[in-house]
Length: 267
Length: 266
Image (cartoon, rainbow over all chains, first blue to last red):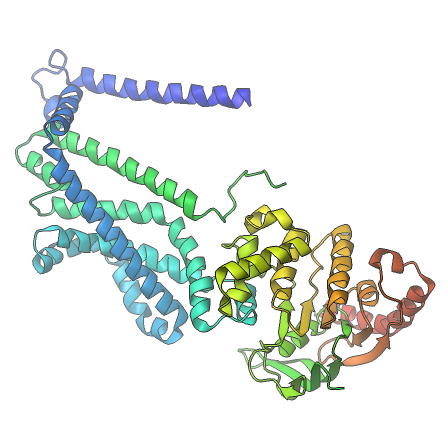
């Protein structure tokens, strides 16, 4: 126990040290004394200025409306994409005819690089949040859809037969067997789908918008304000980590019934 | 008396996708009286499970009829409970919620269902384990949950497909004794499938021997006149048990050898 505890502490120490070292290299390489005539700073920004810009955004409050928009788009894309994916996945998995009919279309849509839909969505839904949500939905939908499809297909025959013998009607089978089974696959892909909802929102904003963190980055890029671009990346990374952490929390609550590796305590 | 379950001239022929035909069971007639405990033994691959699937209505026989208390069976057998050989519980539900499932499907109010279910968990020796998920329970405990899940619905006919085959021998004998205790408290008809002759004799009123597959059919029925209540571990040592065992084994041996020879030739 003790050795694993100290190992973990040592690991943390080295991780922090590596971070500081990278920052230091960045700082030194872009500092005016070393970097003359200040070329590297033009391409890579300066760490202190990036931090100052980030601090500035938060202390003056200018970032909040943008963050709010990006998060709203992410959440909407995630929720709508998940609901659609769940519905379609259940429908196609339980209806062999529909599945056979739509199979080539689903395959084609899935293999298409869906980011190219962003301009079309901008035309259809305008430059406000709807077009970003639409892009996020197309990304989330397929992940959820394929997981649900797989989840329903892999419901154990015995569990299904047992539920039927216990008296489950078709609707009860759907609610008590197919959906829970499919949901476990959806939860397993939660990190992916939330991440892609975020990607959809940011990429959508970057390709044309008037609000959002992607918009901030686009603006900064337009004026060669590389420090603001990096500050935007920093904020996005921090929020992606935060979202991922929230998903981990949700997952732990929702998947209590699944065994975890190395879990003992059986009694 | 009208039998609880009557299989009449049942033939089951599977047709595979490439057109191959395989007759698992041929012209089998089998009856289980109300309150009777009948075991079906036979070598592996002789269609024992197929017989049960027909009896519960999961599988339509190619020919023959099934009667449940005299009524012809259409669709699933609503009077029967089924204990599967493999894992059949819902892993996303706790032990308690698995036991309530059947009542829930029948529209019993939640509180009442939960109260009944915890009483049943108590009865199968899992009193404090209601909140556990399946992965937190051992194989024997999961079998008990499955037993409670089936018995809570109070089925008139209980079908069991080698339910204890995956358990170690000690747990198995414990479960067999518990099963006998539960069964004798409230005698229902049982059709118990096993490949283990000792298990069959120690549990049953009657043992039916199936021939080796394909086209299995019963080749003998033996009344087990051992006194009840029985202790499955002890009854194996009585002279009458040994006598019955050697009698039935003589009939079964040829079939086992046949089945073994067939599997080696394939």
